[in-house]
Length: 149
Image (cartoon, rainbow, N blue to C red; front, top):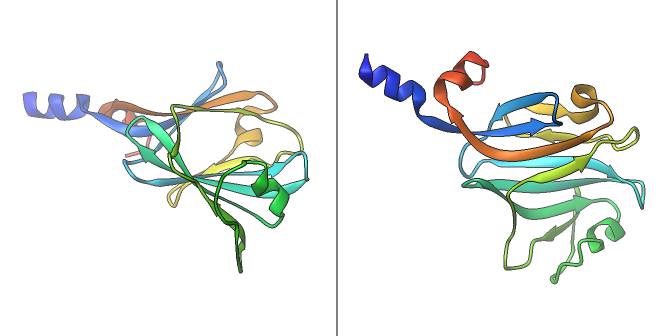
């Protein structure tokens, strides 16, 4: 019984999306990829920012878009590469790591965060607000009760 209690209290890695009134928690393991996709407001084009979880931080690895200007906006050193699925730029060292992402949800932003296991359309879940996205750890019992196990 003690072993079960300890196991249920053991923290597991999740991604918490919250706007101050609502929170969505999704599983995001160490090293797992997560993508933030949106319509960039300046050039009105889709952009995909690819991250991986590194402890309690998100490491931005690369950015993809069909419009080179939206990639140049990041002002990274390095080459932008044309591939069949768009133009890509890799993050230049040192890595761009973030303890959280703060996202303003807009009507036309078409903002979505997803992994290989789940997808959250931000406007559908939070409306037009500001959402903070944080890699955190929660007790396994809470994750299981939330249906994320």
